[in-house]
Image (tube, rainbow, N blue to C red; front, side, top):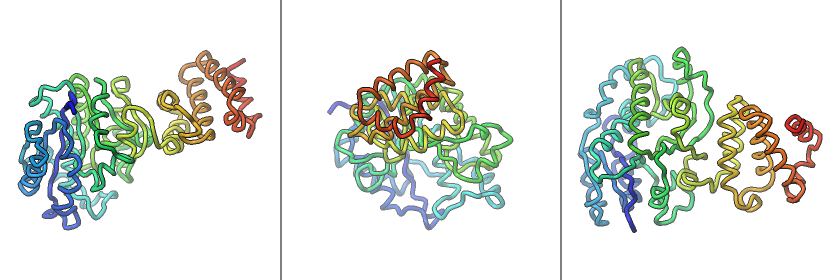
Amino acid sequence: MEVPDVTLTTSCFDLTSFNEKSRSLSDCVNNMKALLEVPIYLVIYADSKCMPMIKEMRAAKGLDSITVYHQIEVNELGKYKYSEKLRKTREYFWPLKDDRSSVESHIIQISKPDLVLSTMDENPFNTSKFGWIDSNLGKDNFSKICENYKEGMLVDVLNKVSNKFHLQILNVCDKKYKNVNNKQEMFLEYRWMVCGCFFTTSKDKGIFILDRLNDIIDENSEKGLGHGEEMFYLDILDEFYDDIHRSYGDYHHILNNFSKQTTGWRYVRDLIINGYRNKGYHRECYDCCRTLLDSIDNPQVNFGFDVYFSIWFAFYLSAFYYKGKGEARSIVNKIMDLIRTVPGMRSEYEKDVVFYGDNFEHALM
């Protein structure tokens, strides 16, 4: 199997000395086993406890030649400079506290941009694309980022990525939290929005996006704010809108949907499409609907006509507000063709003819 033109970066640290409820050393490494067996270019950052086991597992598969190992302790990471500020702030403001989280685990998460940028600079395998993948992928063959993983799936995904920054959208977050005055409110609860455990990018796109992500992380870390890196993507999604290739779904849909939507249709409709509609984010809704509709082969097999019709309807509404009447009219004409020719679409339309008819009339007038 040919090695993809992508260098992924990952990390693994034993945090039990900082928090006794953290994953054990054996769990840390065993949850990484599936990744270590894949023939891809990999740069691994790990501490002195994890690294010997990681090297042994990777070497056992004959993959040392496509692997770079960087042994480093948590307190040697660049973002560790914020540890005392974070610790002090968390003494009086830490609403997202849980048993396994710690300043050290947060430091590791917000270090992802730094580590990928370092790999880009080093480029040990002379690849044109780069990315991040979490090491904690589950003991059951990538179960945390994939449904029904089959050998070669990660390689296939990496072979299909473009030069854009590929990132999976998890949910919808209110853009009011982009305002610096609302940042503390933002961290009162976890605002799900992206799956930060896997992304890919070209160097040209990645340098600007990851540098900006670092700026946002630094600004908030100086104030002692943050819980992982994912919420810091809120500004990135708008500022680099055209440079980001979005896939959609839950964490365990990532590999399945990264290149083309294949699963999680109802999840995306209920949480993401409806989330965009409810908040009036018409551009995002339009692009999400278009991605799903372009991926559908057989709606009855994929998910059922109730979801299919609702995606088309959301596509029409978002087009009306984002693209204007001309685009909305062409979508309505397509929907009406489907209603005339596809019994499943007709039955969904007939559930509320007056409502849908009144809405479509706005585009056809």
